[in-house]
Amino acid sequence: MTAKQRKVTKQRRQLLKGPHGGMQLVLTEDVTHLGKQGEVVEVRPGYARNYLIPRGMATIPTPHNLRLLERYKIRVKQAREARIADLRALAEQINKMPGITIEANANEEGHLYGSAGAPEISRGLKAKGLQVEADMVRLEGPIKETGLYAVKLNLGYEIESEVKVAVIRVQEKK
Image (cartoon, rainbow, N blue to C red; front, side, top):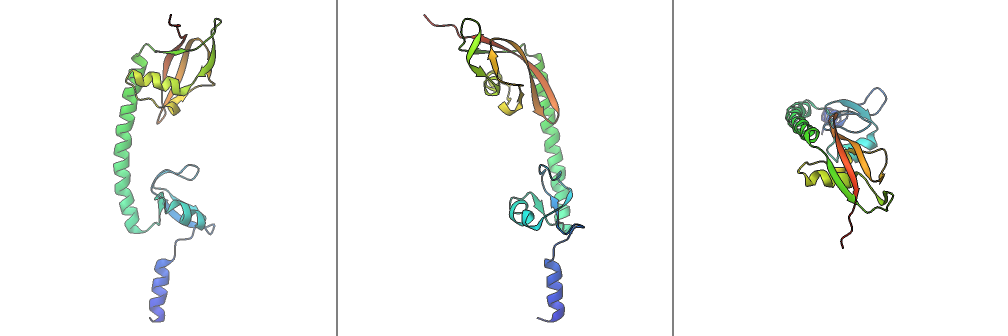
């Protein structure tokens, strides 16, 4: 191998360095606290080699990878638009619904022995045929007493809704 060939292969293997000395990468998906999909970011070499690149979250910004990323972004955008349309329809169904009822063990004064939280509300909505996950439910704290509550739901993509939740005492069977 001649000196010129060694120089060419060494140049090909060299990664782009950013202005601060880190590696430049193109994100293939959104990474929390780093950037959105398609952005060129600068990260430390170890973070790039050991975390981002092996997990497929980023790639080296070659012309070929940038073209592939553009095609991928179009597909992701279409999927995101379809998901937003589905979530808006779900929010519309939730707003039309009168509410849900949760039965819980409580004493005579209406204090619950346990509490009602996001998983119970999610279960109640799923029983009505609405696919709402527990992490979509926004509560200030667990519900500790019987009564009627207005619970906010964050369905994603800044689509919010509100559902009425009635927490009632379980009737004892005789």
